[in-house]
Figure 1: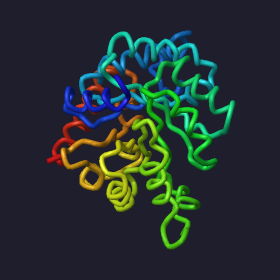
Figure 2: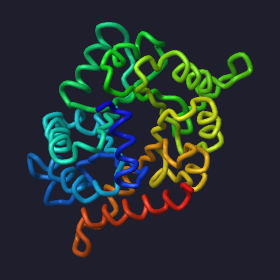
Figure 3: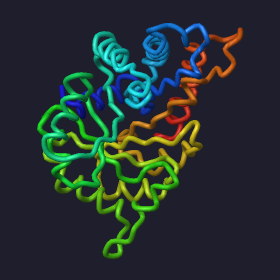
Length: 275
């Protein structure tokens, strides 16, 4: 099954456009996990089990693991997902961008080492920096287009022949780069007008949409701008708002149950505007 096929099936099976981001900050984990050698794995496993019924994808952010030498725990998490939730795509958030043999190694890292279904990549170095990922015919390459951070405008909104650069990226990916039919784009929920512009350019290509939850993106505006005609087409990511739904670790609701509650609320809020 290809990335697009798996994603489409997950949208339908779970009736959800919610992507759960796995960004485990060791300083925010429950105190009893912070000192455990496999505390990151245990935390993410509990989050996954609690939210899998609400998710169309899981998105591990590789930096949160590599910064603390926890790549082995990331491997274990991806293995756990593949064995226990094989129907839910793994989107490796790595934002890779390099050419030739180096890009080939990054593709191997994402698709062989971690077994991801898709990986985020940067378009800045052009098509030959994306092409190695497309050699994996069943895997996805999700290209940065209009990112959710304010500084993205420094480059993405540059005027190129009367058109913002991010729209050139969207058109390039949709019309020329999507050689294996498995590409998607990253467009932030914090810019719904640009999100609507991208959707008008790319047709039904999937969008990874960060920026709801902790970043404050408006769910109604996001869904209205980015959904396809059948009410699908997006992986709307929420990370910190779900992972750390229980900021106070002393007593009361446990972290996994709190995560499930927020994930369900977010999924339901998205679904209210899907039509």
